[in-house]
Length: 616
Image (cartoon, helix red, strand yellow):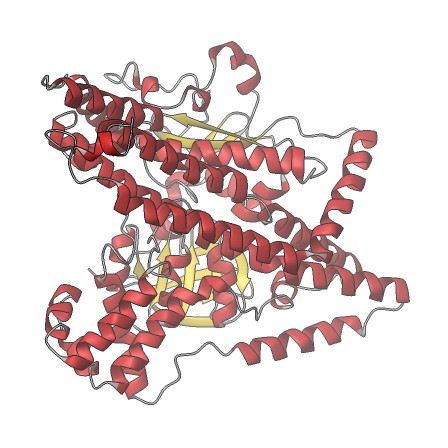
């Protein structure tokens, strides 16, 4: 199946999938009554956040929450001048996104919203340290509560309730308790996803945009990299998971366990061996201390997690591969720390260089204010990914899997992982049915088993379909700041799309110059997040996108090329912090480049050149 021309979202029908819409929340389906409006809006397939087909659980857990939270913050809370938020819809299992069209464009409304936005941005910038501390404290309290719920979910439902049910005047049965625990887990999850995900990130993008636009207005020749490097060198909490791995690598060397880690085939074998020695037990105790929350990192293919993607603690072989690399460097006497001091020194030099070029006191004051604001809010971009898209999702999914085990034991679903073919409300309904059938002792209905089997067949067809990049009129250009800055959508995307059939013949690829420098090397193309362990020192990583769980890889590679993302995407930020060249927003880099190709990336100009094709 192939669709390459621009189409209406209402025309993309795959035979044999009729009725697929019921798999997803109705708010994510294009409404027929608004067809005339939506056929005039330009949508693009959102592969940066959702690079593959969405199961119903994933649509509820990420797309629905993202739409609800982002639109409220952009439009009603941040009051971003032109923004009315973004549309997010699902077409044949794939996510499509667009700015709410038309954005505000009349001068009076824009002026009023700009004044209100600047008032709020100024307040956040002035009080950011206190606000961010409260934000992280509140988030961690919620996450700890989600983490603790796991131990309260029963492994099974009793044949009869304990007699203490009377003594405690309990009232609530074990079956009802399960339903209420799920509702609590869902409440906590949604609170973080919708209420806290965008609390500062939109402000951070806006502050970065304001600083960038000012710099370009007074320094016509300044590059995007120089602007970005003036706000690098931050001690981001998002680097802490990587620092914990480094800490464990150093400890292994100190305890004489380095060779054991290097020689072990996998982490389970390593754990078994360490449990038999005192030093091994000490190391495992420290590993356990790091586990929550630092190792609840999901190795996402996109910028939103999927329910079938591993997190470090679920697949510790990922951590094992990073440990091996760091231990090898330590034994060679090499440093494994980021050179933060060098980044701060360079940042200061760049700031002074451009500050001294300004002619008026008014310009100097404005430059200082915008730089300070962008530097402060910069930390919020990566840290919300850590708290929201990693820990919150991983901990909620951990609990959902335990609820799913109960459903499978009762026969309401076939196996625990089938739960991810249900929407959130459907999981609640299934648990209510669990309570009903447990209380009566009747055999359960097969309706969810049959529905899930049907959904699996439909999703298989969706996975074979080649979804178009754009839907709607290509002459329309997005103005939503969040969309442009984070996703890297620009004129280059549209020009490249017209040449889609020629992509694999390209020898040069263009993108955003995210982190400066030129480097040549062998490429390692990674499409599936589980393959991150295949990276070898000195390779150039080529992938659709990266996320914080990929951060240790940046200490291994010497350059990175990603399909999507702008100057404030994860790959761009972390590449600058690690001082390696990066080109982002290439659109098709991971399609054109193959593993083993010799390539040159120019992070200063935003170019990738294929020097020699691999023979394999």
